[in-house]
Length: 185
Image 1 (cartoon, rainbow, N blue to C red):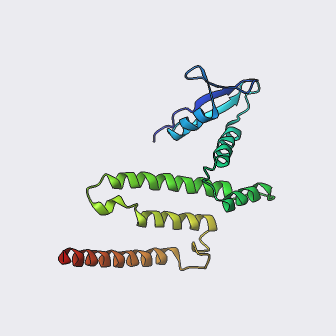
Image 2: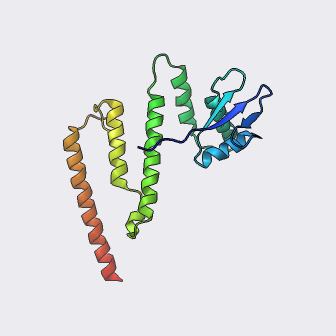
Image 3: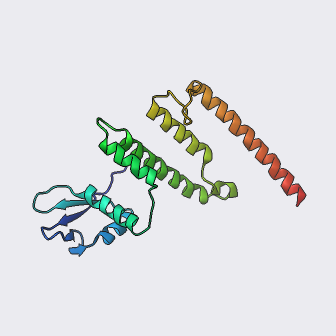
């Protein structure tokens, strides 16, 4: 098990200036955005009170990018986020977003691994693995009551077996098509 490195500590002074404690210099929101793009975790704290301001500043970075036309979040998603904050009681949105981004990071790392393989088909993302992850996630979120399309489905073991057989059939058809194409050349 690998430990996460300590986040880069940024202190906010009363003047609202942000101070990078590693390099002993002042930084901007754009600098902080760059640290994050480079894979660095950051923690922003108020020097006087010790309050953690990280969320506030990360949201500010996102808002600035959105206002410059660098839209990443669709309006429907933004509406859902606002609803999750305004609705009473506990929301599953934070856990859903966290799990979704974890799956995305895992999927991206698998794509990078596959691109290094010699097989040209390995350059494509692992469709089967990502589909299985998505289904497992949906089952966890819904307690196994629904399929990703909202209808009740067969038992998880039967569903997985059927999907595996379908994928094997698709693979076989793809291999046959590749054979026919190579013979035509």
